[in-house]
Image (cartoon, rainbow, N blue to C red):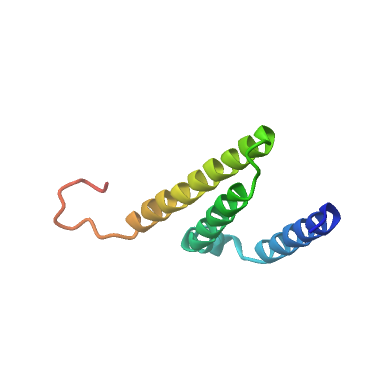
Length: 101
């Protein structure tokens, strides 16, 4: 795939993602985003596959791929942390003795 095709696909995906997210009501945005953590996993898998295709003699591409995998992993982990904190808000505190925490 040449660079122009890849750029076109990236721009189309960015525009589509923005349009979809912009139409979600504010009250549903956080639960929807934290509930879709599997998307972060797909991004992480894609970054690892792309990193695996990089030739060994291109250190700049290897570094960029490593950063993409690192950021994808942080994004996935952060999504699960947000989901856990959000679900904790809806748990009953009766009998825990934690005083509302």
